[in-house]
Image 1 (spheres, rainbow, N blue to C red):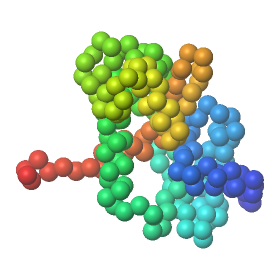
Image 2: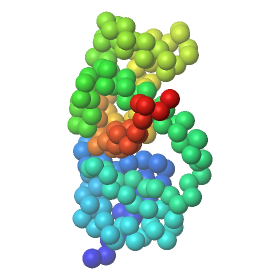
Image 3: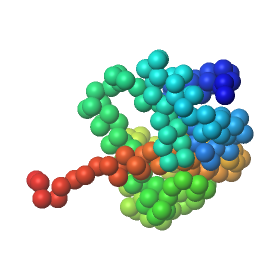
Image 4: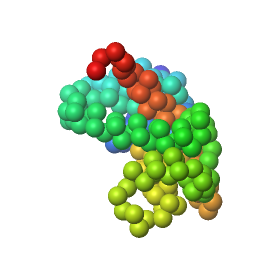
Length: 183
């Protein structure tokens, strides 16, 4: 079957900016794209390969990897340190934090206010001490949203859902093998 050129363009625009296409997105237009890519994966894959983009399927999400990426291995590792800290923060907030979880910013703020370990982790994300806990949590969640790991379900009450693409971060952390005998 021929795939819709409009769909290939929209998927390319999204994934080429480093975004993810997640199975549990709440946006109907993205869910339709996800379903289409899932059904016609080989066709989509063959469209992007000549452009140097490799369509990859993760655990309920799609993303691009690129030949000869622009980042050095050191830059990638440095960027991932940041993600490890964020994963640790959310796991401290709620053990088992991950795909499909729903939460409100106010719940994280409340827990930061009563648990010093969580608050200490949050404080390490920003150097500006004048920013309120609520604003720091909102900024963190907005950052995760911009990167395609969360979506806002309730603007008024700041309610979010963790997208399937969050598995990408967890999968990479699981690949890290640290030998405890090597010092």
